[in-house]
Length: 151
Image (tube, rainbow, N blue to C red; front, side, top):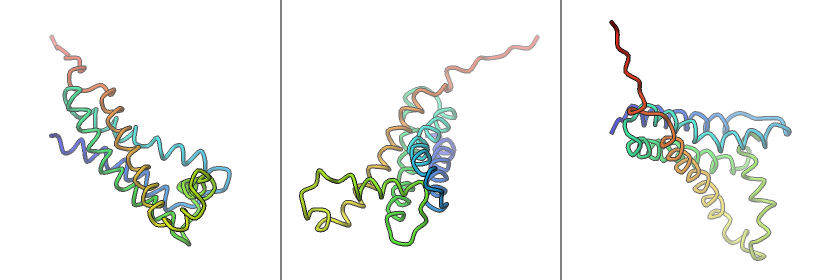
Protein backbone atom coordinates (compact mmCIF):
# COMPACT_ATOMS: atom_id res chain seq x y z
CA UNK A 1 0.00 0.00 0.00
CA UNK A 2 1.42 3.34 -1.06
CA UNK A 3 0.37 5.56 1.84
CA UNK A 4 1.69 8.69 0.14
CA UNK A 5 -0.74 8.16 -2.72
CA UNK A 6 -3.61 7.70 -0.29
CA UNK A 7 -2.51 10.79 1.65
CA UNK A 8 -2.37 12.94 -1.50
CA UNK A 9 -5.85 11.91 -2.62
CA UNK A 10 -7.40 12.19 0.85
CA UNK A 11 -5.84 15.62 1.38
CA UNK A 12 -7.33 16.89 -1.87
CA UNK A 13 -10.76 15.53 -0.93
CA UNK A 14 -10.59 16.94 2.59
CA UNK A 15 -9.46 20.30 1.22
CA UNK A 16 -12.51 20.49 -1.03
CA UNK A 17 -14.79 19.57 1.87
CA UNK A 18 -13.33 22.06 4.34
CA UNK A 19 -13.30 24.89 1.82
CA UNK A 20 -16.91 24.17 0.85
CA UNK A 21 -18.04 24.25 4.47
CA UNK A 22 -16.11 27.33 5.57
CA UNK A 23 -16.57 29.80 2.72
CA UNK A 24 -19.85 31.67 2.26
CA UNK A 25 -20.99 32.02 -1.35
CA UNK A 26 -23.54 34.18 -3.15
CA UNK A 27 -26.84 32.49 -3.85
CA UNK A 28 -26.22 32.07 -7.59
CA UNK A 29 -22.94 30.24 -7.01
CA UNK A 30 -24.12 27.69 -4.43
CA UNK A 31 -25.58 25.04 -6.74
CA UNK A 32 -22.66 24.93 -9.20
CA UNK A 33 -20.26 24.88 -6.25
CA UNK A 34 -22.20 21.99 -4.68
CA UNK A 35 -21.91 20.02 -7.92
CA UNK A 36 -18.20 20.80 -7.99
CA UNK A 37 -17.73 19.67 -4.40
CA UNK A 38 -19.56 16.40 -5.06
CA UNK A 39 -17.29 15.83 -8.07
CA UNK A 40 -14.24 16.51 -5.90
CA UNK A 41 -13.91 12.81 -5.12
CA UNK A 42 -12.85 12.30 -8.72
CA UNK A 43 -9.84 14.57 -8.19
CA UNK A 44 -8.70 12.80 -5.03
CA UNK A 45 -9.15 9.38 -6.60
CA UNK A 46 -7.26 10.40 -9.72
CA UNK A 47 -4.37 11.76 -7.67
CA UNK A 48 -4.21 8.61 -5.56
CA UNK A 49 -4.42 6.39 -8.63
CA UNK A 50 -1.63 8.18 -10.48
CA UNK A 51 0.80 7.34 -7.72
CA UNK A 52 -0.21 3.67 -7.33
CA UNK A 53 0.80 0.64 -9.40
CA UNK A 54 -1.52 -1.77 -11.22
CA UNK A 55 -5.17 -0.97 -11.83
CA UNK A 56 -6.28 -3.11 -8.87
CA UNK A 57 -3.91 -1.23 -6.60
CA UNK A 58 -5.17 2.04 -8.04
CA UNK A 59 -8.78 1.14 -7.24
CA UNK A 60 -7.84 0.22 -3.66
CA UNK A 61 -5.82 3.40 -3.19
CA UNK A 62 -8.60 5.55 -4.66
CA UNK A 63 -11.26 3.92 -2.50
CA UNK A 64 -9.18 4.40 0.64
CA UNK A 65 -8.44 8.02 -0.26
CA UNK A 66 -12.15 8.50 -0.94
CA UNK A 67 -13.00 6.91 2.40
CA UNK A 68 -10.77 9.32 4.29
CA UNK A 69 -11.81 12.33 2.21
CA UNK A 70 -15.43 11.22 2.35
CA UNK A 71 -15.20 11.16 6.13
CA UNK A 72 -14.05 14.77 6.02
CA UNK A 73 -16.91 15.61 3.65
CA UNK A 74 -19.42 13.86 5.92
CA UNK A 75 -18.24 15.92 8.89
CA UNK A 76 -18.35 19.09 6.78
CA UNK A 77 -21.90 18.36 5.58
CA UNK A 78 -23.05 17.56 9.10
CA UNK A 79 -21.45 20.78 10.36
CA UNK A 80 -23.04 22.83 7.57
CA UNK A 81 -26.49 21.59 8.66
CA UNK A 82 -26.03 23.25 12.05
CA UNK A 83 -27.55 26.71 12.68
CA UNK A 84 -25.32 29.71 12.15
CA UNK A 85 -22.89 28.18 9.66
CA UNK A 86 -21.97 30.06 6.47
CA UNK A 87 -24.23 29.58 3.46
CA UNK A 88 -21.62 28.04 1.21
CA UNK A 89 -21.48 25.21 -1.29
CA UNK A 90 -22.88 22.69 1.20
CA UNK A 91 -25.97 24.83 1.83
CA UNK A 92 -27.53 22.98 -1.10
CA UNK A 93 -27.57 19.73 0.89
CA UNK A 94 -29.52 21.51 3.62
CA UNK A 95 -31.93 22.96 1.06
CA UNK A 96 -32.53 19.57 -0.57
CA UNK A 97 -33.14 17.98 2.79
CA UNK A 98 -35.53 20.73 3.89
CA UNK A 99 -37.60 21.02 0.71
CA UNK A 100 -37.07 17.80 -1.19
CA UNK A 101 -38.06 15.38 1.53
CA UNK A 102 -41.68 15.18 0.40
CA UNK A 103 -41.39 11.42 0.13
CA UNK A 104 -41.14 11.20 3.92
CA UNK A 105 -44.36 10.58 5.83
CA UNK A 106 -45.73 13.56 7.77
CA UNK A 107 -43.98 13.93 11.09
CA UNK A 108 -41.03 11.73 10.14
CA UNK A 109 -38.75 14.71 9.56
CA UNK A 110 -39.55 16.03 13.02
CA UNK A 111 -39.11 12.63 14.64
CA UNK A 112 -35.88 11.66 12.85
CA UNK A 113 -34.39 15.14 12.56
CA UNK A 114 -30.85 14.29 13.66
CA UNK A 115 -30.77 10.97 11.81
CA UNK A 116 -31.69 12.65 8.52
CA UNK A 117 -28.70 14.95 8.86
CA UNK A 118 -26.37 12.07 9.61
CA UNK A 119 -27.78 10.05 6.70
CA UNK A 120 -27.27 13.00 4.35
CA UNK A 121 -23.70 13.42 5.55
CA UNK A 122 -22.94 9.72 5.11
CA UNK A 123 -24.50 9.70 1.63
CA UNK A 124 -22.28 12.59 0.55
CA UNK A 125 -19.24 10.84 2.01
CA UNK A 126 -20.12 7.63 0.18
CA UNK A 127 -20.11 9.56 -3.09
CA UNK A 128 -16.42 10.32 -2.52
CA UNK A 129 -15.59 6.65 -1.92
CA UNK A 130 -17.27 5.55 -5.16
CA UNK A 131 -15.80 8.42 -7.17
CA UNK A 132 -12.34 7.81 -5.73
CA UNK A 133 -12.37 4.15 -6.72
CA UNK A 134 -13.67 4.89 -10.23
CA UNK A 135 -11.28 7.75 -10.93
CA UNK A 136 -8.27 5.89 -9.56
CA UNK A 137 -9.06 2.81 -11.62
CA UNK A 138 -9.31 4.93 -14.76
CA UNK A 139 -6.18 6.95 -14.03
CA UNK A 140 -3.00 6.02 -15.87
CA UNK A 141 -0.70 4.27 -13.42
CA UNK A 142 2.46 2.22 -13.19
CA UNK A 143 1.97 -0.06 -16.21
CA UNK A 144 1.24 2.87 -18.53
CA UNK A 145 4.59 4.53 -18.01
CA UNK A 146 6.74 4.69 -21.13
CA UNK A 147 10.39 3.86 -20.50
CA UNK A 148 12.79 6.26 -22.13
CA UNK A 149 16.13 5.06 -23.42
CA UNK A 150 19.09 7.35 -23.91
CA UNK A 151 21.78 6.55 -26.36
